[in-house]
Image (cartoon, rainbow, N blue to C red; front, side, top):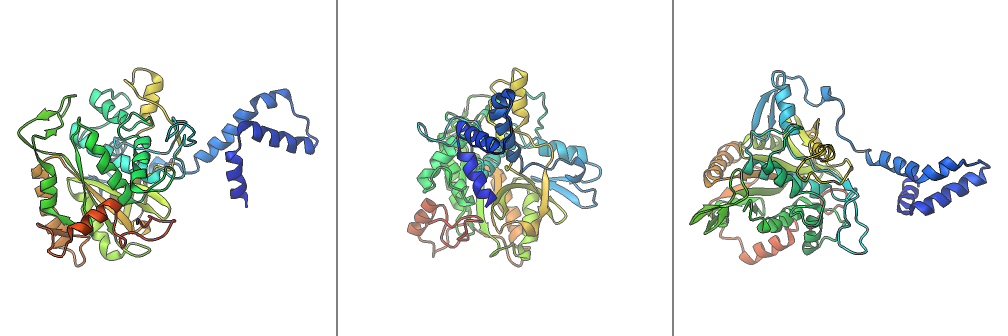
Length: 424
């Protein structure tokens, strides 16, 4: 009852809220000082701002990484939990952290009321985090570290691509509007498959990075499909630290590989846990897109039987870093880096996930395939997915096109609005 009333309250204009508030006070016989009348809109805003922070990052630094003998793995890097705690925190804080934002230009143009993605944009933000990490790895390298003083032009160029404005290539505006082509109206939740397909379309327009996204369908990674997609005659590939792309007769387009999986009915089958852990250890790992029921999360590593994640469910003000030339822009930059990560048991994850890997070169991809074959498939009684050189003879091209257009096959995701949705 209260939650429904609160939703109505949030939809009211400031003047309407003021009128209701004054009416209630007058009915109670309370005399209202003039100062209260003047500050009422700000008081109302403050109350709503408090609600914005119901979902916040872990504020206790002592609880982010447990003091344990178990190794800590973060996107392919191995750490000692006791000896490397500062290095672990620097690594995690250097990842781009995209969260709910409010106060940006409306998505959808004139008449749109979508000036925030709170409540529906968590999977879109997780997609931004994966793609952001891919661009960081491509242009700056996996070992690059952020500090509050960082003003690298390459870093700022990457970050500006994700700002909440229409012109930014990977903004919430571009992702939400491209989602409409996948049958998702602005304001609707995305599933892992939908965000994968949307990002696949958007990266085509980014000549600076010339990255390509391959989405493996039906729990099967076909090696030659990836090779054909990435080997492009006359293609361009990104320069490591500059504005102009390199050109050569034949190039390998940097690859962001997404493998959507369903690892159980309502919870993750324990038989897959070791495989999930192993995937975080690969040098090409970009973690997992997934979540827990009703909450999309970006998983970047694990320790023991817990996964480490970045949580988009914090609402922050929209802003621009521009050239990071003043204190305000520096403060905005800091909001894109999470001070302390969080953890949940692996068994607490939703069974719908998407494995994410980045291969800057063909050598990286071939190395990843060998690791997958040796560690994820040959070593496991029940592999996470299949790896084959060519498409199976039973694979119908027509079915493949239809599945890709939908972003998923009908059997991939649960038909529940509370988890990750069934597409089609």
